Length: 79
Image 1 (cartoon, rainbow, N blue to C red):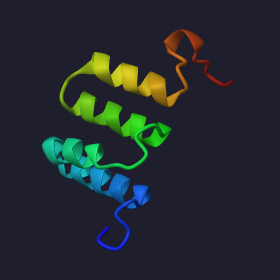
Image 2 (image 1 turned 45 degrees about the vertical axis):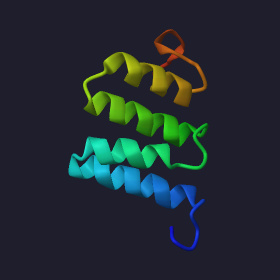
Image 3 (image 1 turned 120 degrees about the vertical axis):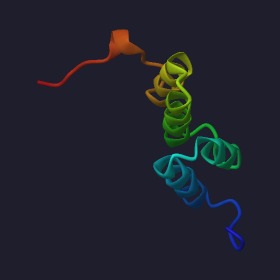
């Protein structure tokens, strides 16, 4: 990141590492530094951070955003 501060993939990797380690505060802070906050992957990570904080409503909102605004009513299970 020192040489490529706008490297979204590296920043996302840092967020995932913090989440895996159980450091939700650090994950949330690192998520704020992600350059492409509108990506679906960032929305999923935002949902994971919210879920780790126990905020299921925020997690659901973030995950719906990751799915392009399709909520549970539009989800389909493939046969």
